[in-house]
Image 1 (tube, each protein chain N blue to C red):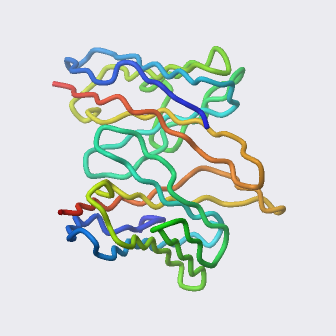
Image 2: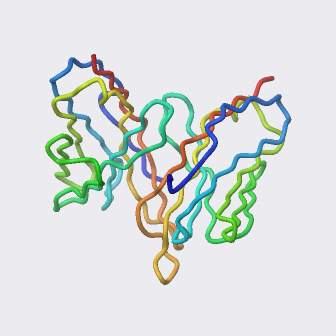
Length: 116
Length: 117
């Protein structure tokens, strides 16, 4: 079993739709939960990160973490064609004081296409 | 945020040859990482390269196949040795930047797309 599982899709939605992307994980040591966006022929770029459980909002993007279920989500509201990309979840641990620590463990990535 | 460049951006190589990929960062960083991203797959960490010490390799990756150099705080190279078609992949350089607060963000280069015939 992989440490992080992510539905690879592909996912195709019309412009304006709400998109839900999800990952599950097995390692309870993960404390930091990240979402990266990767455009074709580019490196991944960080969209958002969340520490421990809870929600975080940034514009049209909302990240949710449910540590009890080992489940994280990224919601994209009012999706745009420019959101078409591969979305990767990633996770890492934390030191006793809360500072992020250890290597990033990635999900497989979900390919999203938003069509006009 | 750190800006990372990689050379070459892509290459097509013959079986049995070696390719060295360069990674340049616009600021001094302690930790640099090399990842592989195979088609339809996630990013897999090959090794961590800290300046002044030997690279640390992840399970399944060995120094003879993927030698790494880290001569200073802004530069690193990854060599893919004795290549086979199974080495066809995107190779990504990454650095960790210490931000204010508790989270150390990782930035990624654009990647080197390698095809082995």
